[in-house]
Length: 301
Image 1 (cartoon, rainbow, N blue to C red):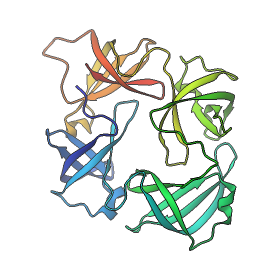
Image 2 (image 1 turned 30 degrees about the vertical axis):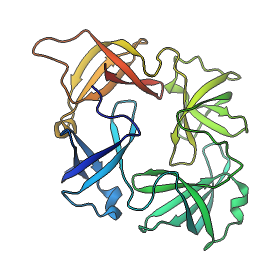
Image 3 (image 1 turned 90 degrees about the horizontal axis):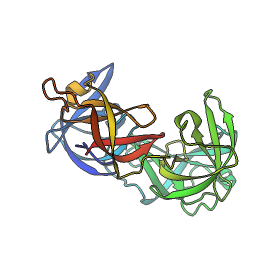
């Protein structure tokens, strides 16, 4: 069974505050008794207390099956249109050496909100100016904004496939190789090449990619169509092992490792042990819930 679905809103109770590896975490429990951890430091301005009932969005399930929660903001919601006052503007370069502007404002909780844009007109903005923004994402308590009616950006919806042309492959400052993709407005996007060894991606090729999310760094995260696995379908995977790490001992969740059709390891979490006594399965029948960084996100199905 799967713990949660990405994007779902789930009620939790704050059970206690603990310290792990020098970081403080809230231990949250849902109505079924499943526990999850939430970084406490990110939400000091939310004024959480032990015993509070809170609603969390399943913000992200990574390619290793780890679940990341985002509590409901006390003031704002994603996709809201709100006015913010500019505190400062910083002109920088992104990883492709393109000029970008970071526009900082203070939200109603006293936390910093930021808009990251490549629109050159934004250099003319002034401190103290009020601007209408769309709230693109709330992550770890911080608000990420986009300019309403910014015509320099292609409007791309999460979950939808779009076509991109692979323009080049480059090694960037982090020493990883990236495919440089362009959309129909010639805006550049990045795919880290080592995540996609089985996708037959080549310079000059057109590739279909699904928009995963709006990243906190101001760009859309893309995921190319998988060459074999389809979201929503079920497949057999070779079982490797079942483990429980130090966080799993708190949440009660097991980590399951399997091999895919290419022989690569995949892992996901489940609240139930799949090992009964000495009986160890050779295969697991799993549903592909999503694909991230070239790897299927699985649940036992």
